[in-house]
Image (cartoon, rainbow, N blue to C red; front, side, top):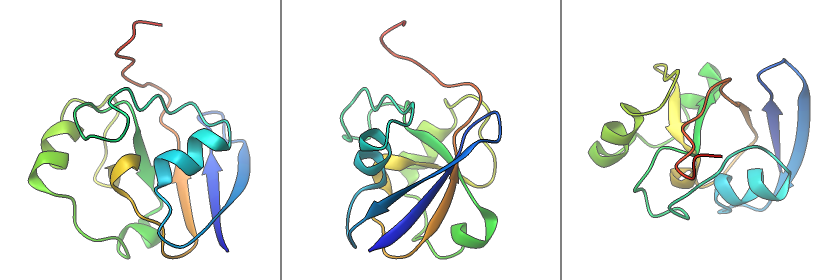
Amino acid sequence: MICVTFIAADGTRSMAQAQPGDRLLEVAQNAGQPLEGTCEGQMACSTCHVIVDGADFANLPPASENEEDLLDLASGATRYSRLACQIRLERAITIRIPAQSRNMHGR
């Protein structure tokens, strides 16, 4: 099992368990995290934007050019920003949920 730690905008921490190869977006949604994932992981929006802990960021494969382009649309993007739909879990990871998110449904 892989431990995923989520840090909410208010600093509250919660954890979820995942299997190797699970996609972070589904793990987060199943854990009740506020990641919309409007495009259902098809990398056509930025509603699953997360900020990866700096130490964990280095362990991820680099973002594709398409992902980088979508991150340009994400509110509050940082150098450690990624799209949760593009992260396949292989080890423990800590994720910060941004305070602002882009909601394509207008909710």
